[in-house]
Length: 291
Image (cartoon, rainbow, N blue to C red; front, side):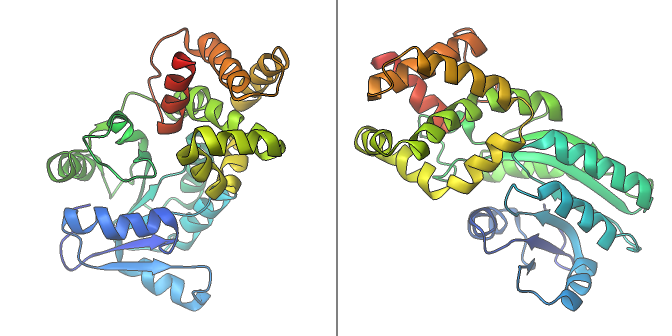
C-alpha cells in the first residue's frame, strides 16, 4: 500500500485487533502516513467523506456478516469518480468473493476494484525467527479490476513492499474456494478442538494446563472461531470426521483430544504438510506427534 502522501488508507474497523495491528506494525513500514477509520460509532454522515479521501479501503471487521458489509461498502462507493481499491481480508474467502463480484457487476463503477486476501500473520505478529513463521504470509486469492482502475501494477508494488520491508511473502497459489477448503482442513480442524474446549469445562481445564497459549488465544477469539465453523462451506465435512474420531476415544483426556485430532489430520491431509498451515494447527500437530 505504498500510497502517495496526498492519498489515504481507510480502515473500516480500525479499533479491532487486526485494525490496530495494521496501524501499529504494517502501514508505517509501508510508508503510509494518512490513515482514516470508520468505527461502529462513526456517524453515518461521516462515512462517505472518509471513503472519498481514500485510495485504499481495508475492511477489517468480524467474520460474521462480512460479505454483507463488503457489499454495503461497494454500494457506498458507487459514485466515486477516482480509483479506489477495496481490500477484503476475510478468513473465509469464497462467500465474500461471490457476493462482492455480483455487487460490483451491478454497480458498474469503472473506478472501483477489489482485492481478496487473507493475511496469515498469527496472533504474535510476524517474527521471522519463530518456528511458525511460514504462516506469516499474505494469501492473495483473487482480484477484480475496474475498467478505469487496473490493479495488477499496484498489487505487484505492494507485494514487493511487503517482501522487502517486512520479509512477508505473498502467495497466489489458491483461489477463494481452494483457500477455504485448505483452511478448513488446518485452521478449521484446530477450531474443532476449540469447540470441544468450549463445550466441555473439564477439557477446557486440560488445555489450559497443557497448551496455555492456545487456550488463551481460543478463549479470546471464541466468537470468531464459532463464526468460522459456521460459515466455511468445508467445515461440515471436517466436523463430522472430528466428531466420529472423538467418539472413538474415551473423550476424557488431553491425549484423547490429540488422538482425535491426529486421526482426522491424517484423513484430510494424508500425513503431508498443509498448503496453508496455521499456528495453532501446527502446534496441535506437533503435540499429537509427541504424545
